[in-house]
Length: 596
Image (cartoon, rainbow, N blue to C red):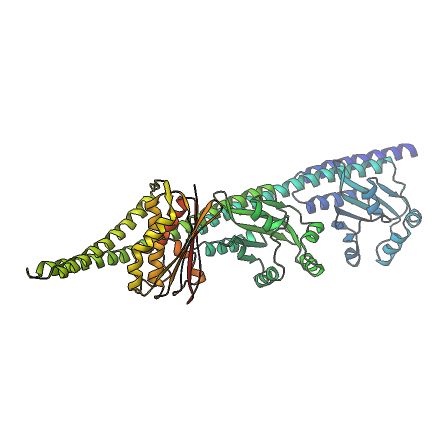
C-alpha cells in the first residue's frame, strides 16, 4: 500500500512538473528579454520543486555573474548577491567554470565543500540553505547563465529532481537565445533607423553650404549622439599637416577638454594606427573593441594612458575623406561607456558619409576656384583695358600732333615725334603678344623651334638693345658672360631675357644691373640681379602666377603676365626659374636650361 501511494505521488509530481514545463515553454515562446526569461524560469522552477529561494544570473566573462531575477531573498540580501565574481569557491561560479551542476544535499554538505560561501550566506541573514542546486545554463557549449535553487531541510536530489532541473536549464538556454536574437533584431532595427536618419540629415547638411569647414562641424555635431559619443574631423592643409576642424561630444563640456588633450598630446604623424595612418594610407580602420593593449600602444606616457582609460573608450572607427583618389582628411567616430560596438555595417555607412564629405569639399573648392577665377578675370580685364588704352591714347596723340605740324617743320622734329609714336606701337604690340602667349599656353599650343644657339651672343644682343632704356632709368648693365651654346628656341629665350631685364630696370630704382651667364655641367645658368625694391617672402612664389604682381599696379604698369609667361617658356625648355630677394635689398632671378 505504501509503495502504491509513493508511486502515485511520484506520478502526480511528474505530471505536475511536465505540465509546468509545457506551460513554461509556452510562456518562454513569448518572452522577448533576458529578464522575462529569468522571471519565468525562476518562478516556475521554484514552485515546481518547492524551493525556498531561487535566482538566475547571466554570465559576463569580464564582469562576472549579474543577477537577472530572484525569488525568496530578503531585500537586505539582494544587493549582496546581485553581482558575484566568477571565481572558484562559490557554488554558482563553480557550476559555470566547470560546466557541471553542483548538488549540495544538506547544510553539512554545503559547509564542508563551501565553508566561506556558507559563512557569507549566514552573515546576510538569508534563510538557511540546507540544500542547494546550481546548474549552468549553456548554449552551444558556452555558459550563458546559471540558475540556483535552495531548499529548507535535506534534499538528496534524486533522478527526477536532476532531470527536471536539467530540463529547466535547457529551456532557459533556449529562451536566452531567443531573447538574444530578439534583442539583437530590435537593436539592429533601431541602429538601421538611426543610420538612415543620419545619412539623410547628413546629406542635407553637406549640401547646405559651400563653407566646407562649417559643414563638417555641423556633420560632427549631427553624429553625436546618434551614431557616436565622440566625433572628430581632421583636414590636411596646404602644408601637408593635418588640422582638427571639428570635434563633438555628447557632453558639450568635454569638447574643449578634447581640444586641449589634442594640443597636449598631438598625434604622431608616423603612427601605425589611428588618424595619422588613415591620412597616410587612405584605408579605413575599425576597432569593434578598444582593448587595453590598443590604449597602451597609443599613449605617450603614463599620464596619457590614465586619461585614455578614464575616458572609457569602447569602440571606434576612422575613415578617410577623399577628393577623387587624394586623401584630404579623416573622420573619427568613438563609442564610450556601455554603448554598442561598431560593426562592418557601421563602417560602410561611415565610408559613404566620408565619400559625400569629400565630394562636398571638392565642390566647395571648385566654387572657390571659379569665384577666384571670375574675380581675377574681372581685375585683369580692368587692368588690361587700362594698359591697352595707355599706349593707344599716346599713339593717337602723337598722330594728331604729326598731322597738325606745319609743312615747314624741321624733319628732326617730325622724326622725333614719329619715333615716339612707333615706341608706343611697340609697347602695344608687346601687350598684345603677351595676351596671345597666354592663350597659346593655356590651350597647350605653345611650340618651340629649337636650333643650335650661342646663348652668350643672345644675352649680349638683348642687353645692348635695352641699354638705352636702362640708361634713361639711371641704371647700367654689367655683364659677366661665359660662352655657352645649346639647342633652344631663340625667339622665346629672347622673350625670357628681355622680360627679366625689363623688370630689373623697372624695379631697380636706378641701381646697377648684373647679368651673369655660366655653364654648370650640361646646364646653362643665367642670373639677372638688381638692387631695387625687392620682393617680400610671401610674394616670391606668387609672382610667377598668372595675373599676379608683388607691387601696386597703380605705381607700376603691366598685365601681371610677364613672369608667368617666362616661367612657362623656361619650363617648356625643361628648365627652372627661381628668385632670391629681400625687401629694400634687391632681387636675383636665376634661370637654368639644359643644353639639349
